[in-house]
Length: 224
Image (cartoon, rainbow, N blue to C red; front, side, top):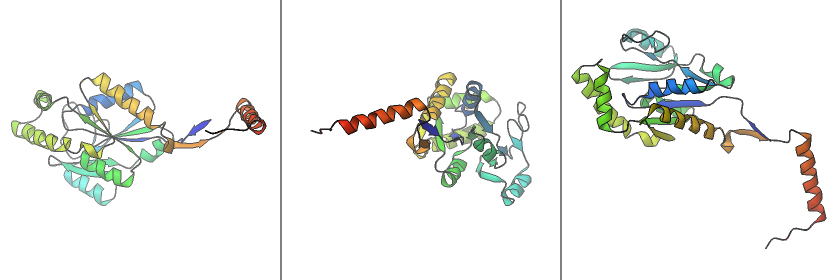
């Protein structure tokens, strides 16, 4: 009886650096084949485990700024002296095909998307504690002490922005956190404002409605 909208859901996921959003999203992609992750672009240097076009699209700072002038990005932001942005290409195509699209982006960019597409779903991932966050940042082994301190200060500021999101999920365990976000996505699709129409689509349902109408005609209703 209920027909939901064919278009996919745009899901914006943000988190402080070190909160584990990338790992959670990868787990979600393993569990749900209707999800498509939009690959972001950045001007930060490649790390040893990065893959061009999979981890990020990598540009020099000058190249990124030229892309901004060309209106290439849905959103972009500057974070820790580097640019991050979401290319518009392919996003609408995947949404129109009924796929749910994930944007893994920073808070600045998320708020830009919220202004443009307020009906999108916004999820913020929190670390279990600041102590655990510091431990994760240090264990990466990719940043200097100064850079870790800078990221930690930014993370603390970012966690105060959580009220701008629809949902918050604490990353105690990867599996549980991923399942929670997948449950949120399912629930969002049951919202009344995401329903296209309610209709009778079988002969049995039609006959049932006819019998109810006939019964109402033959019996008066008393409301006390």
